[in-house]
Image 1: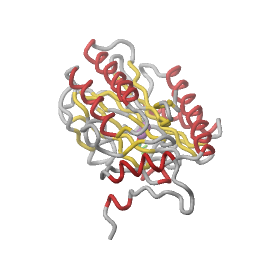
Image 2: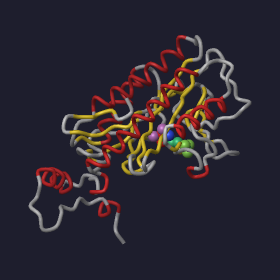
Image 3: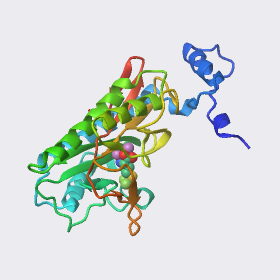
Length: 286
Ligand code: MF3
Ligand code: CO
Ligand code: CO
């Protein structure tokens, strides 16, 4: 039986001289670090496909930004996202994904993520709302989410939304080629805690592009130098969920999807899909 690390071994291509990348990865691997498998490094053609999926996914979120308002239902957002995506040749990835019943996740206030749109759920003045869209185009995936403030909200909820965005930016800046997932998580958690907020631990970012969710897990907390080594050509999300109160969450027992804060205090999240390049991260969902 292979252990976890064996499965993650980096193998140079047989019969070919070691590349610079092989040498760098093998050096980490020999020190016991978790390294990517070759299939996590995208080809130029795959990157082009994911880039195009990213452009469409951004158009979907821009369309939501133009239309979101108090008084509409989360099901209205679902219809808008579904129709717009199809009209532009894409497929909304959430629909029927592991049984998810809708084309977008809409998560209001104390809903951390995976909010299921419903006709009787009406956006109210003062709500903070995460809209998370994932678009499939020609078989490639791009995943991103934004927060929307409905009308005016409290200064504290406004600050939560801002700090959550900063957490994504801090993580993004920390990510360099041949860094570790834990370097990103460490920086993100530090920024959240510095501002008096907490980081959700039960959900994480993820590799994406060829499938909805791939390796590695991208945790938004942790120790530097832990987690998977990140090398050029890898595509993954960073999507910190930042809570105003306690970090603990509960999953809705009835629907098995919607994630709430345990203390019913609000939560905020922003997400992008990134490509690791020789110079750091490129946002594919800008
Ligand atoms: N878009 C979410 C993420 O960022 C995943 C949603 S799964 C779904 O990973 F089924 F709820 F859509
Ligand atoms: Co994601
Ligand atoms: Co998402």
